[in-house]
Image (tube, rainbow, N blue to C red; front, side, top):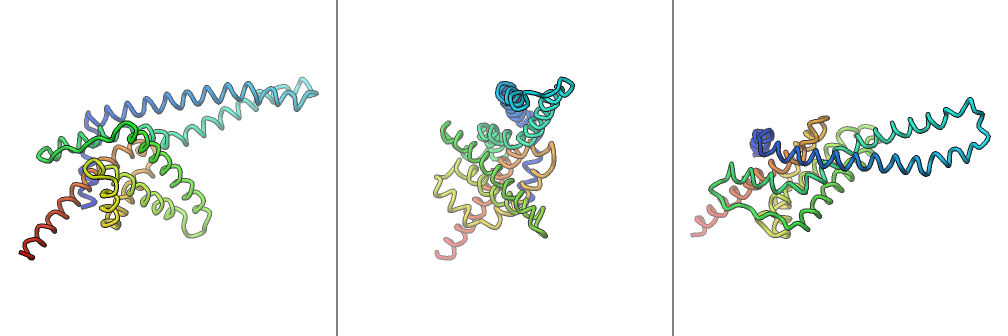
Length: 244
């Protein structure tokens, strides 16, 4: 079931509809990071460089290049920081377009089923912020656990597998169910959803490809939610027949 869902998600990942969502997400991400870059650069030049000159007022003229070196080092540090932020920022922006991804999957692969209901704008923004928090928290926790001998990469997969599986499955389920019902369904199938989360964590671990993680995860969990719902309905039907 899990690999069927992953395979179905990958088959849609490079479709024209998904590319449109990805380019919108990537474009907004770059705009946000560009704004952060110029904002941080202006703040550094306004506050840090005058502080440097004030702290070293008697710096010999032949060492005046140190302030230039400090500015270059700060710029490189900022660039490295922004590179690390690409995946989390992409995640929070992609959260605004996950319903578009879900609608494509539902329309193309489950045309005979009633379509899901998109989250209201406020809920979509809250969901995207939650996804951002999950990605940040998962990677911070995993980073600390990397310091524990014998855990290392395993920590990354376990933490992200649990968090990503939980959040993306509940997103897919809430298109058809209330939040309490979605959470209850997730708890009943916690093992399956955790294993699916491990697949998403593996996707997240691949550089460059990880920019597509929100789209892949949303599509995969739409499929998984459909499969679990169909399986539960079949079991309920069999139980009703046995009771009858």
